[in-house]
Image (tube, rainbow over all chains, first blue to last red; front, side):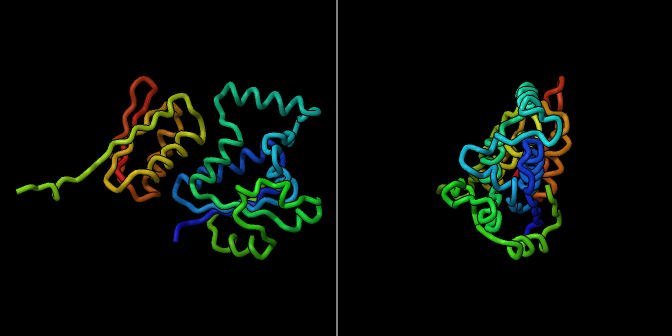
Length: 139
Length: 82
């Protein structure tokens, strides 16, 4: 079996979603299997039309910071989160959505981009993935 | 008598990631390698400095053959055999 990486995507901040997806795609590119477990604010980024809408974790300044960073990223030729996510799926990455978050935050399966989600699960699913992973991150 | 059976069909795949930054060169290399058949050659051309080091790391991790790495005026070419 291939080496594996599991990341809990807890934050919905723009910069942290970038970190999670870049690490995930790097791991897939180097031949690892990757599971992303989306929970809390992270899961809300999987709602339809919400992926690119996260604030910056620092210096967001009511969205001005987020817009500034996005324009700097564009200049530096950094790809969009949408592109990173579609690469992630193309390379065989797995997405797990936290059911409890859906319940707490009143997110219905219909609100989420179900075409991207491989599995709906709880902590047991995460532990099952994490215990066989060489890289385990919480972002 | 034909010796068609001895001919090995080998394709060369070119990936151009000139101007692209992290993680695109690595990801595009992996995408091309996944699509390639065993024996195919994937040639990646790019300018992102870190990827020149990291694509060979990925090639090693994937147990594939790194054929050549060369650079001219900031543009590198990496040849990989699947």
